[in-house]
Image (cartoon, rainbow, N blue to C red; front, side):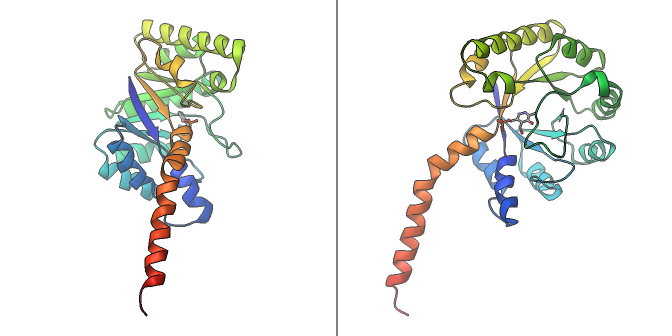
Length: 242
Ligand code: PXP
């Protein structure tokens, strides 16, 4: 099973200060060194974290799968055709949300999404639809021609105890239905170092897309070293003769 690492969260920290660092392109290099099978970035219409120059920079340096998450708008389809990611994942987008809150509403937006799928897959780039673990949405995904789906695991991730097991069963059933229909199946959202295990054990899953938890853990893994480096620098500068 493949792991796609979402580096948007690095750009979120950068944008909080409107600074140059941390750079999601450097985070991309480190994720590749750590064994990531893919890199995901979400170019939002409001450019609140990843911006167009990040996309260009990351496209140039990534030879593993670059998964571009985006809304099914004409602007984004144009950008995808120009930058040629290895995979496009269509997601719903609301200006006020903190993060993607649920799967696509295929009943409401199926026509618009099909138009985007035709344009992008017509140019040889596979399209994945980010959907809730719902048999009806899986059937529509197949009917409108998507090659892949990404099952939203947010409800599973946020649930506890029996409710989490019930959500897990919904995900399992959805994976089975999608595989039976010949779709490639991914999953993501809210997965962390604990709850990932039961999702990773599902047979037939192609890839998991994980961001927040990995970027959070990287702070814990790296902060001690970062402080030590700064301390060393200050110490040697304060000892130096002027
Ligand atoms: N998949 C999709 C479609 C997403 O929008 C996100 C969040 O950016 C993720 C996966 C990763 O979610 P998380 O950051 O909670 O791991």
